[in-house]
Amino acid sequence: MTHILEAGLDIMEHNNPHSLPKIKGYNIINGQLKLSTSGETFSSVNPAILTDILGEFPLSNKADVREAIKAARDAFDGWSATPAPTRGQIIGNMGRLLMEHKEELVRLQAREIGKTLKECGGEIQEAIDTCLFFQSEGRRLYGQTVNSELPDKELFTYRRPLGVCGIINACNFPSAVPFWKMIPAIICGNTCVWKSPQDSPLLSFALARIMHQAGLPDGVINLIHGKGSGAGQHLVDAVDDGLINKISFTGSTSVGKAIGEVCGRNLVSCSLELGGKNPLVVMPSADIDNAVEGAYWGGFGTAGQRCTSLGNLILHQDIYDEFMDKFMQKVVETRIGDSLHNKDVLYGSMLSEKYAIDFLSSISKIDSEGAKKEWGDGRITVDSIPKNFVGNPEEGVYMWPHVYTGVTEEMDCFHEEVFGPAVTVVKADDFEHALHLANASPYGLSSAIYTNDRLEAYRFKTGIRAGMTGINNSTSGAEAHLPFGGVKGSGNGTRESGIWVIESYSYWHAVNDELSGKLQLAQMDVDEIEMVEAEVDYSSLA
Figure 1: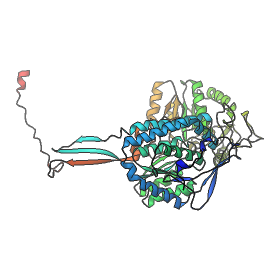
Figure 2: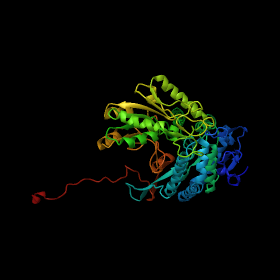
Figure 3: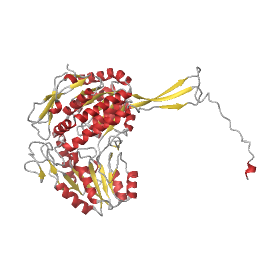
Figure 4: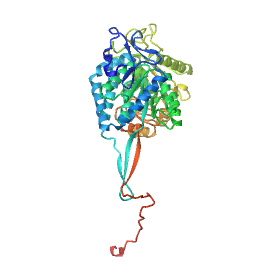
């Protein structure tokens, strides 16, 4: 088998659908390019141009997954013994290579999942920022020296790696999120088996090649392709066999709960970043124009395919009409199309035809509940084209932006995540009612409030049950040094990004170093200090 660095595949140059043949993709196991042992494959398809096949990739089975796990387990001792600053230097190399190849990676990502070039650029930059942040953490994986209660004894604490981490991420953020997961994992000394998203295997292949080019030893990160119900499930099943020490998953709440059950019964750590029905509240004191911009971007950026996308738009009754007039003006004018061929589009295609089918099912359910559809007509076709759509709708999978009003807390659409360009609008009587509505869904990922009343802002950020809150800002947006994650149905309390994520990929090791040459027992051999009455004549101080 060919080593990944010897493959000679200029995969990042393949960004013109009409100039180059499709790529033959591989798993990367112990640094070697591997096909599936069954010989089965699947294709990566450009959702903006369905006739554009980017590549063919292994449909990995249990044997392939187990081979990748073995490679990660074999590499663990050597990698965990590598000094953390050296691990950090390799991660820094990754960041610099990402910078060198940023433009090609941005175009590759836009082609493979249909996101706009601008958004893909921001996401690759997030991966770069993550590398540069954690490079320095290699010199700051601090433990502590702790004073003992006994003489001639030293106490220490150290961070230790967990072992082999199974990494499963969604395709809506196919570069930032795997770096959020794997970079802190490997800086702590863990090794990884990464199951790429089924809809972005070529980008994952390119990123894995960059990791190896940066100097990553073979077996530290192993890439397998395939379905979530196939390779992904086999990776989770390995927890039951004692082969995986950590699962990090980004995806739906239902799948996250199933993974949590497997990890829980095996006492294995898991990080679960799941769905959201993110509320955005607008109060009368808000800058309405600014709030409209935030709601518009939160609802329709990435075609609404973010876990942090705006779900419930909660408007105070006093500004409801003014806000909706301005908001709908922007919605009607939304420019949609393939950003590789058209400038200034707000969003592009759905991530794949599967996501399109699921979205259409969700809005059909909203229609049946009696919410009023203010705008939207499902999939964009030659017979149903919004005003500012650019391109040929028959080439790809594009959706109208959708807005529903008259939504109440009793409706399912108030509580259920709709993964696509759809916003449900709810009217609030006052601040207390708005805060209640913001907390009423089963999710708790992101949230936002637009207000210029500082007391309202304070009461919202202290009263909301969410992992993240924007004040006069949208529900979406993250930075590499800020913790990312949710509560309730949005996750299990673990966090991505920043120094906080280190807790998810390491455990504390306490060391008791006895220097006295004899057995000393804490709490039992400690000299008791008796209290004595101070011989001071306080009367002279009167």
